[in-house]
Amino acid sequence: MENEIVRATDSSVIPGLAYRVANAANIAAIDRLVDATRYPYVVAWGKWLGFTPQAVQKNVLQAQEDNAPPESIQKIDGQWRVLDDIQNDENRRRVVQFARSAHGRAR
Image 1: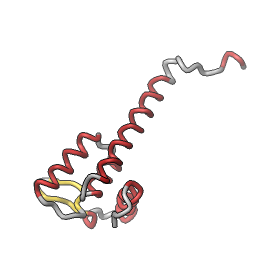
Image 2 (image 1 turned 135 degrees about the horizontal axis):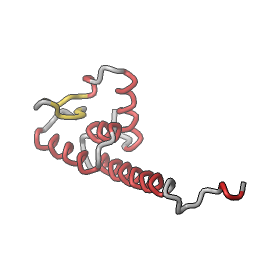
Image 3 (image 1 turned 180 degrees about the horizontal axis):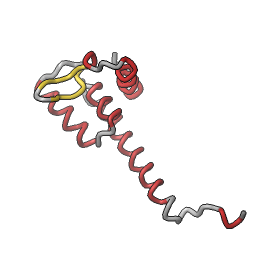
Image 4 (image 1 turned 60 degrees about the horizontal axis):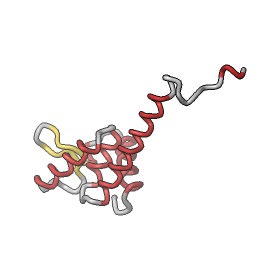
């Protein structure tokens, strides 16, 4: 039994820990973007889909440039998609929940 203890230096443990730390850092960076934008759903959508903070920031800047609707989530084929374009009610609810959890003023 004593030989079965997982050591912190095991090659199977280090990548998992590194991934979790990087993922947590990305989520924290994305959450900070919500407070800095009037497009909380663009941020929440990117967080939900696993975008990098840089990709979320790029989408937010594009929304600002385009003066996109406040409930925009992502620009696809030259057109801004909004919350109501998410057909699955549960998915739409999750995006709203992500926005609310990071920022109190989201719908």
